[in-house]
Length: 420
Image 1 (cartoon, one colour):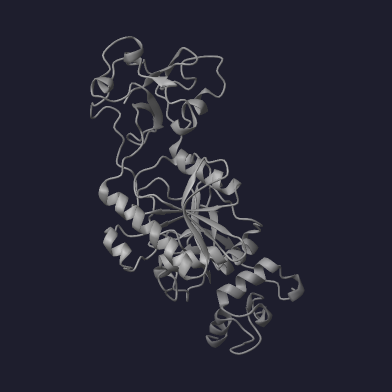
Image 2 (image 1 turned 60 degrees about the vertical axis):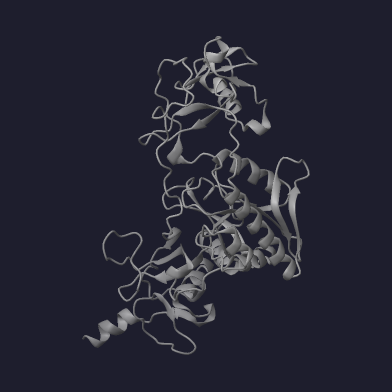
């Protein structure tokens, strides 16, 4: 990897370790040099050694003297580094067979359900191709992208935005928990399976990327811990968080790839983007039941889910060390700006979340003053329809006051009264 390149069109030397790239008067230069090679002149950036007529180890090895820029990950820092083209990953025979088998299974599943499905469909501007395009009965179009090898975050972002602009909802399929496409766009992770098992119809469970909304009241009797407390405390509020099927209470049935093919096309499952607690930028993409999505929007006041996350998240901001350029060709050398192992992005932990504060104790509060958000949250947390809600005669908290299993006092007040 190199820390400098030659810009062939501007005739300038670029220092990747400096915030201004070592040059003045070129606004937008950083964005330009980090543009995907498929969207720019592949000979835009040149190895400095090659430009100066010195030995280029890459060219001597039968490869290209032209370069591309990426963010590396070194000891918690994110420097820009340059590497020699070609950058296109050549899939192994096993990867190619897996890719083809998954694509064919998605198309065959959609066709079996009576949905329109095609393989290898280009967008109108031909800037991206969906491995499988499934169209639902109402015209919803899902562009399946099977990505079983590494892809840069910028490529995922660019292709996803292009799909959305052409009324296609992208759905990326991965098999690796560390792949950078996770949470860059709507995604789903499956097991690393032999192509023969995929073709033979062996169960393909969605291991990551599909979640259910769980709403609960944070009281001592709750089976869940308070997400706002490091200990075993309870805040008395109502929490809403997104969980994998196996971590739901009660546990939900695993989602198969066939389930997602159908439900995504019919609108029964939809993509949402949920910011992490305390951060408006970093967050999680996920597929969720449409009913859970509607409840979530009502709880957080969000009218439409965000289709694509920010291209650059807070945890991977570029680091500039401000060093001198090394003009020696570094192609083929190991241990020089080698990236750390990619972190696991699919952790499977509860994510997102919102907490509604405990309602104030006011015995004179009228039910008509309860907000729709409070009513929706309490209904989900208590497992009863909204019309069965009412105020506890003791503390004024929302509880199940009407219908079957109704009571005048909440559990906490009943416990206090019985103890007197």
